[in-house]
Length: 367
Image (cartoon, rainbow, N blue to C red):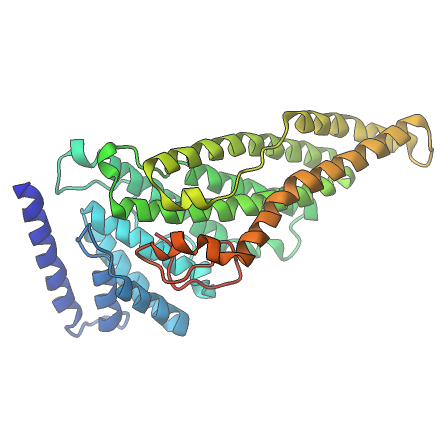
């Protein structure tokens, strides 16, 4: 207990010292005293409090002027590179996550994160107490770093990048990989039932919903056009559908874990639609037989072609009824923001986050 009190006192002293240094004129043109002070306050050593106002200042600066991005990245990366406190590291990741959700083009094109927490280890408490926090930070960092990379590659749709199906499959592969990383971000120790961790997990839940919605929408588009695809593309589509089946099960399990742990947003997520195994098997049969039937029977209304058309229409109906349901849930949630506002308003880094509406720019990311 004495050690914990001492750590809090030294943390406050360090934050105050950093704020004082931030207000001294620096040689670098990248520096901004106001922005640096806001970043320091938003990533303070106080594990019981998040400075919401300072985080808002950071996001307001970024949205107001792209020129602010360079001093932001400089100040945040400098603080993250120096810190050995799990509290500061998590707050820094949350702040960076919020910057991404400002939807500023220059940030989206940034690529990798400007700092590295892949081997982070807290030095203020023993490993027996902090191993769970260390793992959480490394997993959270890995996700954000990959997310930054994917967003910076959004222009891959332009130019000669292969067929539309090929582009869709590429996007799906990236989204599914990102979802795998998201599902790894979780508290793994009992001493992690803290407000700061629960708020960070609230944000992870919202991000999972967003990524899974993208996956469902993209799979729907792929399956509806799989009949005109090349054999290799159809086979890739099948692998993606099989992976989506597994991820749907993993996601349901993840959400149950989060609910039991006390993550608020986990209780706000609608039921996850699973892909029936029989539909995966039917797609296998269609893919294996479609090329042969189209080649041999094209232009002939014989029984084989009739059967193919019937199966095709039936599968299209299944796709529409099963997959678009999830997308419609997104629209329903967008139209009923009041139902999810209680979870969002309780988050310590948020005033208003339309979590399921990609077009809106949130004031804060939900933590």
